[in-house]
Amino acid sequence: QVQLVESGGNLVQPGGSLRLSCAASGFTFSSYVMGWYRQALGKERELVATVTQAGGRTNYVESVKGRFSISRDNVKKAVYLQMNSLKPEDTAVYYCNVAPIQAAFSSWGQGTQVTVSS
Image 1 (cartoon, one colour):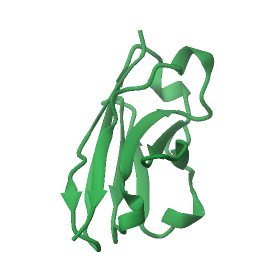
Image 2: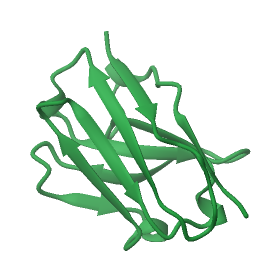
Image 3: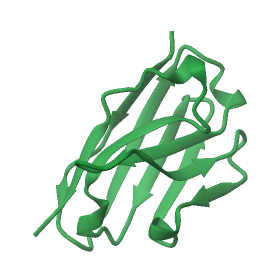
Image 4: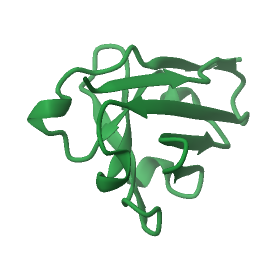
């Protein structure tokens, strides 16, 4: 079955950096656009970054453009999110999944908590 395991979240000061990782299994990873999503307390989950199947094209939500960078390794079946110049408003639980979400991927991983605070 589909498994997505996120890691790398932490408490970091404003302006700091983190690198999130996601290990995928149970599906043909290289066939899917992958994305990083986040959900802040009391808010809906939002898609913040996507990367195409071969990694050649990326897209970002306006609020993270120029600060976040998504990448993938199809051999390792992993997707990464490099986050720089972090702001308090980036505080959220971060998840990876295919993009857009499809029925077979409706079960989410546990996510990884990112907290940006001084």
